[in-house]
Length: 279
Image (cartoon, rainbow, N blue to C red):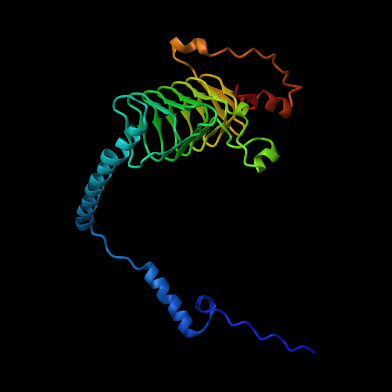
């Protein structure tokens, strides 16, 4: 008959966390007291302290922007417009390609650009005038990515004209590059608004004035002055274009009304704009 296994002794951390011993209980109480300890903050003292902090922060961040981030970003540009500004982060640009930036472009935060010069000698990224790119955006350029004028790109957006790997599993396992046919230029037309965390895949074309809702995945063509959402992105609404741009919007075909007595929830869902294509 085997002897019973001796009980495993708890570690010091486990003993402190759960032991009913008075010493462990007192130490837990002391920890809670230290965690909850705070100092008074009379405004007559903390407001000048805040003003001092904000002033020093403005000086440091201003120096980082004017003396480090902006000059280095502008050095990458092959064509540079006027009044191009950045935030405090140096854009992370890999590979060799043409970076063309228009007037009054603002890069608000971290920007990562990867040029994959495997398919063309000089991949090209164009950023049109008055475009604003927010924090933590990523752009992969195998051939060409074009961003129009007045485009608003929110944080965390990824734009890529190449998937980075071939579709065939054997070639992917061998570390082969993607097929050249799978590398398709991306175009974002003027005054589009790209929501946060959007993924724009190769070959996508986003029409003028359109809105891509947050967390959407775009893999195709988005009509001008259209609102899309989802994965894959589908049309959920339309926008009224300016009078001089009305010719860009195609009128939707009229649908025959469904008699109320025979209309079902499935019929109603089928007629919902959210079910229509983003194209």
